[in-house]
View 1 (tube, rainbow, N blue to C red):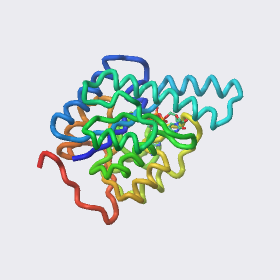
View 2 (tube, rainbow, N blue to C red):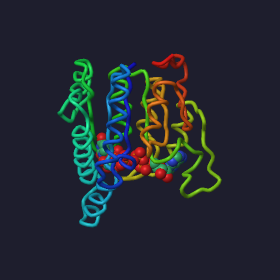
View 3 (cartoon, rainbow, N blue to C red):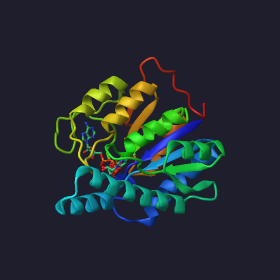
View 4 (tube, helix red, strand yellow):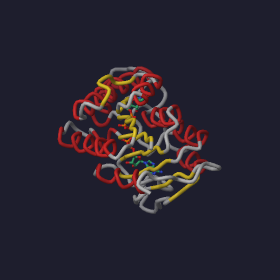
Length: 237
Ligand SMILES: Nc1ncnc2c1ncn2[C@@H]1O[C@H](COP(=O)(O)OP(=O)(O)O)[C@@H](O)[C@H]1O
Ligand SMILES: O=c1ccn([C@@H]2O[C@H](COP(=O)(O)OP(=O)(O)O)[C@@H](O)[C@H]2O)c(=O)[nH]1
C-alpha cells in the first residue's frame, strides 16, 4: 500500500519539541515496517506563522510571505528527516518527481512546500496523485472536517464521511491568506476530487491515531469518499 501522510505544522511543530517529532517519525517507521510505501508532507506550524506575522508587519506581500512559509516547512521537513531512520531519503524533495523517485527506490520521501499560493495540503494531494497513492491522510489539529470552524462555531457538526465535492463546498468559504488555517486547503480539495483519491482527515495531535487509520481504516475523523473511485482497500485486511 502506498500512502501519503500530510503532517500539519500545527501537530508536528506548534513549537519545537524533539519528542513530538520523534513520535511522528515512529509512526511513519512503524507503517514502513508493515510494508507501506510512504510519502510525508510537513507543514510550517507556529514558527511559520511567527515569521509570516513579522514579515507582514514589515510590509512583505503575500507571495513573499508564502516564500517564507515554504522555507519554514522545509526546515520542519529536515526535522522529521533527522528523526527517521536510514530508510528516509535525506534530501527534502522540492518537486514531485524527486519525491516519486525516492519512493520508487524504496525510500520514505519527505516534502515541505513547493510554490506560493497554496499550502502543504495541496502539496500532499498532488504528491499522492503523482505517485498513485492508495490513500491520502491529513493529520491535522482538528478531528475531521466540520460544517463550520469548530473553534469559532459551537454548533459546527463533524462529517463522518463526505463526498469530495462537498469538501470543496465547505472549504471554499475559508479565507486564504499566507498562514491561514483550514483542515485542507481549497486546491487540495479540488485535487482530491479530480484524482478520486481516497482521503482521511483526522486529529494527528497524537500520532498513534494515524497507524490504525492507515492499516484498518479505524479513526474518528472524516472519510472523503471519492465519487466513482475504487472501494477502499486496507493493507491489513
Ligand atoms: N470547516 C472546518 N472544519 C474543521 N476545521 C476547520 C474548519 N474551518 C476552519 N477550521 C480550522 O482549521 C484548523 C486546522 O488547520 P491548521 O491548524 O492550520 O492545521 P494544519 O497545521 O494541519 O494545517 C482547525 O484548528 C480549525 O479551527
Ligand atoms: O506549497 C506551499 C506550502 C506552503 N506555503 C506557505 O507556507 C505556509 C505554511 O504552510 P502550511 O499552511 O501548509 O503549514 P501548516 O498550516 O500545516 O502549519 C502556508 O500558509 C503558505 O503561506 C506555500 O506558499 N506553498
